[in-house]
Image (cartoon, rainbow, N blue to C red; front, side, top):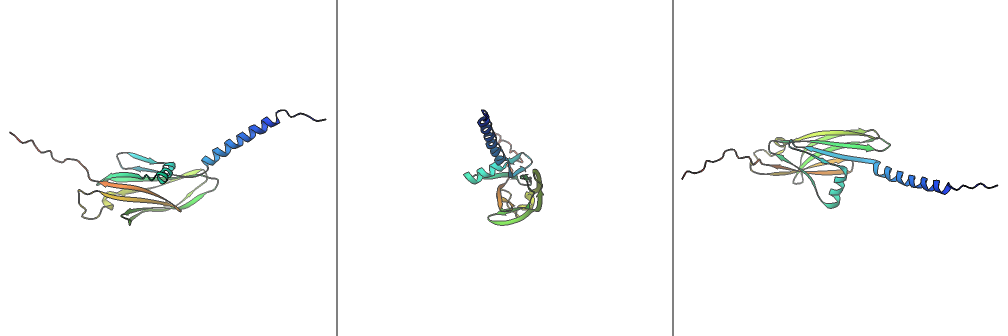
Length: 173
């Protein structure tokens, strides 16, 4: 005697549909993600992991401006959305005209599964500008952040302040 399974195909279809949805959710979530926050004292700039991908795709660049005598605080966050622990060395270096100026950071990080970690460093214009540099000249630097084989670049523009120190009095007739 055979029994009928009227709803069997409906349940199989719903299970396959739910499986496909779960695959897309996990595929979009599982992985390593990085984020950079640059705070120059005037505003904070957030660079998310997908903006790095857009930079590589469209050729744009991430950048920040610093006034002479100012500083920028960098916070680099690594989010591990994987089932295994992630460990690597994070290196940040400062470059000018393809010449390394300074090592800013070299730190070994270990991120447990489904957790995140941050590394921080500061760039001070007083430390990076050449000795006896002209006061009215801008300088351009690149901060390279290396994590394993992945390398990120941030442009740094050190500019002069346009503050007028003394306002001349108008000429009398």
